[in-house]
Amino acid sequence: FRSLPPIIDFSNREWYGEALRIMTDERYKVFGRPDQPIIELHYVPEGKISNGSQENEIEAQALVQYLSKLVTSEDYSGASIGVICLFEEQAALIQELVAQQILEEEWDEHDLVAVTPDGFQGDERDVILYSLSWDNDLMPRQALSQRQRNHPHEQGMLNVAFTRARDEIHIFHSAPIDTFTLADGHPGALTRWLHHCAAVQVAGRQKPARSRLGQVDSEFEAEVAAALRKRDLIVLHQYPACGFHIDLVCEHEDVRVAVECDGERYHLDEHGQLRLEDLEREAILRRAGWRIVRIPYRKWLRDPEEQVKVVLKAIADERNALENGTNGDIPQSIAIPIEPSASVSAHTKVRTVTATQGAVLTAIREGLTDEERVLYRARDALGASRLTAPLRRRLLAELQYLSHQGLVAIEDHEYFPTSELKEVQLHISPQRSYGYRSRRYRKHWRRV
Image (cartoon, rainbow, N blue to C red; front, side, top):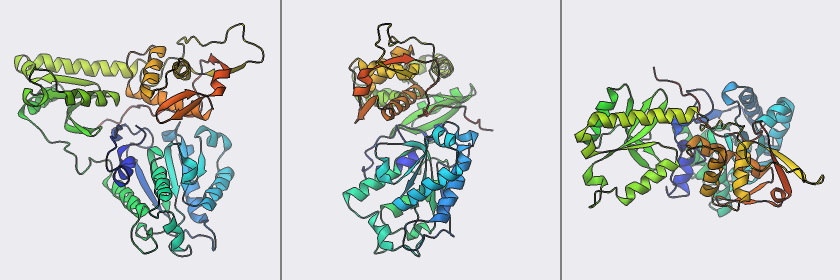
């Protein structure tokens, strides 16, 4: 759920044998211009390290200058931002430059941090900027080779470094990417990652090479798509999502639903019920936020127009769900029964939280630990009818924020109350939370 596919794809291949099921969709990139690449490389050929150190001041200045534009841009309002450096001295230099050139309130607003990969364990940001320092001239190649040698710590460090961003990454480098090799000249994980990033940038926001997007699997699917297009819907065939391919994705004015065409031969068992694998597949897609409409072949033959109406109603329902407060902007007036009582001791700490934060804390205080149980209980506390993808992302973002505030401990998708949470009274504020911002849907730019 963390990263957009182009960001996580490399680690999925390099270290996980493509076993990760990626639940995000790059169409819902949150920050940046509509044409902003998810991955962008910034070549600083004049960058050189200081002799005998790991500092590359020119590269650091280029990064901080770009960072200064990000933190003041409306396109990145609310985005959390981090900087990752391969070398400690470069991280310290960038920290100094940020303190000199970026206002403290902007640093706080975007939750800015500049560290090495080891300092980013368990953390994440919407946007990550990388400073690689290497200049292929003054720095010994052995120093670069050490950062990507085939050793569990170094490989783990690189995996952490490459997977901290949710929405967008920028890589600043002072040497051609082909030079980022091991001491013997062979490519390492860093080399391969840079080539992956360059390929993503060149390809732009296009379909993956191995995608079946656009292919039609059956005449039934083609008939359904043709009927939906007559209702002014944009229809995409075999849309890749969560490691599957959705038969049809129907869009209308930036709202979309998934349509599955259930032919009897492939989707129904001997009792005429959906096969187990289809039920599991649907559960995963729904968990990723998809609204799914199933069109059985017999119902289509009997009354095609009625099935088209079902799809149109699903689109209308999805639009209402996104507009009535369940798209991440939860009404703040909802009452949650964790207000401090009149008998609270004067020495009792009172922590003010938003309604959304209060909802997840209520679930955790009730003894729920599993992520799904916590999220569904929080949904109920907020009065939402569905755990939509935007609401899920907001709740998860709030849990991360509460973890940084010392109220929640997170371990392998389980949540536990800290001693701090057990000792405080919680007060619901009408104000929005400050700090972590959720990935949320925003108005998409329409095709013209």
